[in-house]
Length: 163
Image 1 (cartoon, rainbow, N blue to C red):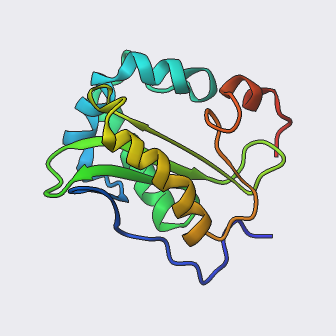
Image 2 (cartoon, rainbow, N blue to C red; image 1 turned 120 degrees about the vertical axis):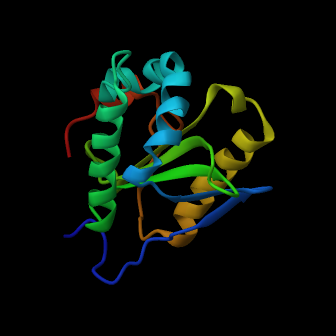
């Protein structure tokens, strides 16, 4: 069975909170993605490092652009999705939402997200935390989405058998 139905159209803009929205990330977002990621690198590594090896302390802007170009291609091919959390005029990136096919057994999608350090514990983070599971349930065609780091720890996720 395919990961997504052939006729599924992914959302291209999702309002989040008071002037913030999600949209599929692009390689052209590197200029705003790189400072967001590297400005929160230690906390992001603590969250995603053991599972993804990301983001390394040595990541260059060129490596970030290569990674974003890969995400852009995967979005276009409906292989996986990376949504940037942006302000209204898209001059700053405040986090990302990842929607991926399952790497571990027992789910039909794996969804995770983050906000930059300066937005941790703010109404923007609260709004994103509330929005993502509801958006996934309402818009995406998944029956058993999993939220690593939310509905189970990353360590528990790593211990699951492969998909």
